[in-house]
Amino acid sequence: MNSSLPVPSHHHHLVVTLVCPDQPGIVHAVSGAIVEARGNITESQQFSSADTGRFFIRLQVESPANRDELQAALAPIIERYAMASVIDVVGRPLRTLVLASTAGHCVNDLLFRQRGGQLAVQVPLVLSNHGTLRDLVGFYGVPFESLPITDAASKAAFEARVVEAVEAHDIELVVLARYMQILSPELCAYLEGRAINIHHSFLPGFKGANPYKQAHARGVKLIGATAHFVTSDLDEGPIIEQNVVRVDHSRTPGELVAIGQDEESRTLTQAVKWFAENRVLLDGARTIIFK
Image (tube, rainbow, N blue to C red; front, side, top):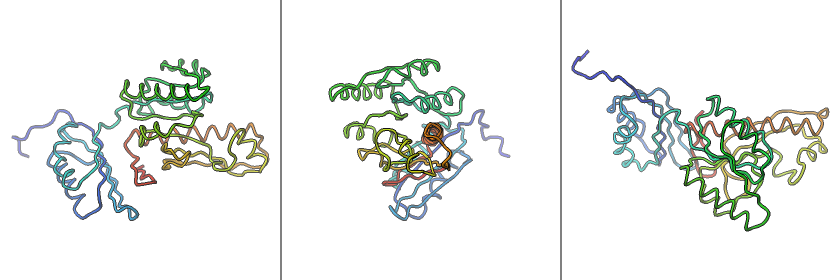
């Protein structure tokens, strides 16, 4: 052992995601730069997309180098391979704005898991077009605002408040936790790649009011939920997570609603968790999930 080498008193735990055109030598170059920064790779996942010709890699690194120092060490590699890169601290709470309407199951699950330390997000505000969830959100000590939407002007005012909140709180993720309004194309574009929505699995069937009643009438055997990125194409953004549970003829419409809400909560929270951990990467119209 060379006693002249300094022994680090503290190691930083960092996450690195890199996306670039696929070509030979990427992993070797990246790992070599991390070694030069005295980093130890504790987790590594990679994927080459035959559809888009792009390469995706996610690494977790322990190193005496901090975030900025590791960024500097990887900078020549990032430039050489024209990489889109993210370097962050593992477990850093993601600044998250929650949008809601009247249903509380998804909001409750997100805030409960945030408070319990199971979800690496920090929610500075829940913004709703109804006042229904004020007491629920207040229970978790999170600020709550309601702005009613009754016409085009009030909808524009609500969306302006969303943009204002995103900028004021340096928001990194917007979660539509059963927010029952269609976002304008302008807001969708503004939030591209950083807004997640949840809906029941019946879409595009059983649209409109009482989808679970419609499903019950048709004898549906599967109930589930889909979490996806928000785009201007309604409910057609890149899918992050989906879950499903079997049901049968004995279930009442009310029971189907309860089962569906459980799946919606579970699915949305999982999608937010993966996003907060830098495990969700976009590959065109689909996602790469490094679980």
